[in-house]
Length: 182
Length: 102
Image 1 (tube, each protein chain N blue to C red):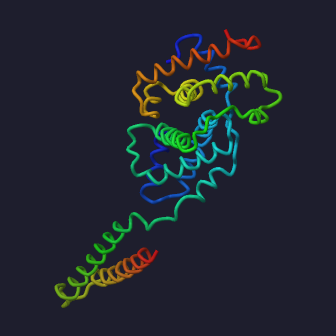
Image 2: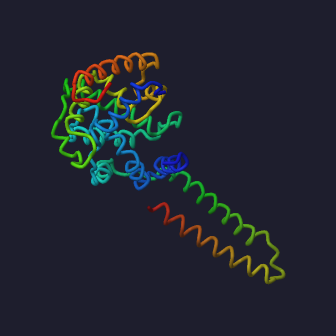
Image 3: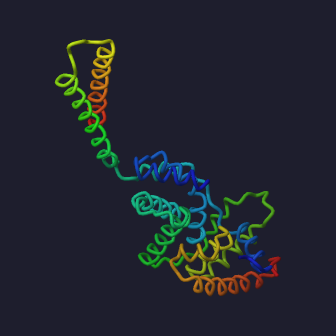
């Protein structure tokens, strides 16, 4: 979404409580946000949808406090991560991979189910913080500065976590001889 | 930011093999249904100010037209002014009542 369009939609939400404008924002950002949460929750689709809904509702309620210093997507990811973290603290839920989610993978895709299981198992070996950073960095292509803004951590801390996560993932993926990972 | 082959390989693998986003066509509708009820219009104060100012302006013109204008000779311009003033006053009153009753 273009920045100007985003600003126009946010202005309509703030000034006129325009629900259609907010719906457009939800439609635009929900795929990326839900994929982020899907990888944090290790494939738990129901929990992903619950957290994503809470994220957008909280965003709507506090949209007047959005100052535009960060991008709207960074702000949304921050709320989503906070929602996920609050859920973990409430439930002490240690997410393990939901293999059933792989049923959604297309049968004619070039990659194998085994490769997906290995990648997702490698993600499961990470801490919640490391998994969030890896997801934002490698899947959503966010720069370290924006990841630091999402997770409210210093950039140096993000770099350390990322470095550790890379080593863990590389070790987990090279352990499996079926992987073409070098 | 990604500047080595491990980064590129991890990015390729994660984008391809991590958990995908499962499309949910009802997601946006469900979010909008869960939003709280609409609050009173946030621009109400602005509307009240604008319509009050317009009404006071009309009142001022009526005061001028009835008390201070020269009525010894009535010209076409006076007649047009009078009808325009009536039309503007009716429009301001009608729109103001309609907007404030929403």
